[in-house]
Length: 231
Ligand SMILES: Nc1ncnc2c1ncn2[C@@H]1O[C@H](COP(=O)(O)OP(=O)(O)OP(=O)(O)O)[C@@H](O)[C@H]1O
Image 1 (cartoon, protein in one colour):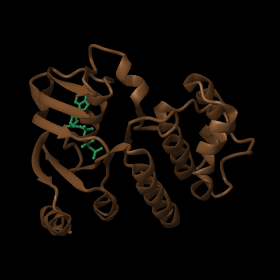
Image 2 (cartoon, rainbow, N blue to C red):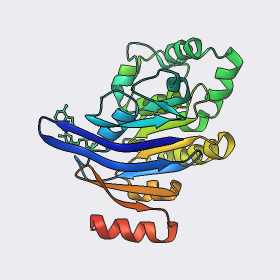
Image 3 (cartoon, rainbow, N blue to C red):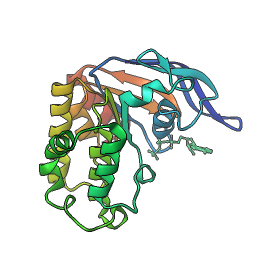
């Protein structure tokens, strides 16, 4: 689904990302971990063509993201608060996206119904602008938006951050359900080793921009990560 080859990003002379090759197959739940500054967000931003790589390329479903626009209809993402229109209420925002994605009112209702438990009656039908939501509720809107429009790939940067413990568990359940039902390829970056190892069948560990571990064995993952992070 995603192929990354000889990807390098430099700021001035400093190499902040250097990934020789990375193949992410369809329907994989791919976890990305690493200490602050390891390059996780940079990698996600290059995959979404928000930042151009210094060299190398990212291919999504056969298309080079820096050379084509067609891959955009296959990918949903929530990286940070800048991705939302915070002067809208949640209902206005979802309605705007419904029109952009060409969904019917019923399709939108079906999509949002999946988030009822996660939203916990705090988000829909409120007169609050997104900018006035709590950080956790704001993030829930972003995650629901990222999964809208039947994407084949969903990228989430720190999806568990700022969520209360029940919401974290509800989100994990939702991601696993969606992966099962819709064969979505999830790319999830997180500092929460427990959550990411719970839901991802593969974890890549970045250090100073390089892949230093590519863990696919569930039984060894937790131990290897705990050893690396000293947790
Ligand atoms: N616009 C920029 N100019 C210069 N350096 C940058 C720029 N953007 C990112 N960097 C550098 O690239 C490196 C990787 O940053 P990145 O944000 O990708 O790390 P991260 O793994 O997402 O970190 P965190 O866990 O703290 O979110 C860091 O050293 C950062 O300072």
